[in-house]
Image (cartoon, rainbow, N blue to C red; front, side, top):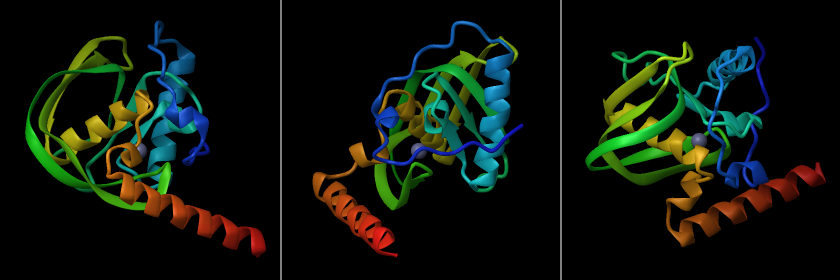
Length: 171
Ligand SMILES: [Zn+2]
């Protein structure tokens, strides 16, 4: 297993739609292991494969630090099959450092996909789990939290990022 590098905004791969996985082979399984290790090393609750540079529809989620009833799982080719209600949730993203913003999400969702063992699976969740699933599926469609907040907030973030980069270049 290996800890992989997490791509950061504005990396172009984060804007692309990831492709469906058509065969679950050793490569995909290794990817899931590496993504899990990367997720834990970064203290995150969810990770999409495109965030580590692999544009395939694979996500890993472990919201256990926030919701102790949940545990780690991976979904391949996840699809939202039902959704209900609305919730506003403060989200961060490992690919968008120093950004914590309230995002409107569905309160409850059900996702269907394939497990790492190749079996069809369904995950239903509300609260943190529902938000994490929507956040990671967004990544597979090239959508970041920055696309879900107001243009003004996005602009403030871009400026903050620019300043940070200029500072780093000087030192
Ligand atoms: Zn993210």
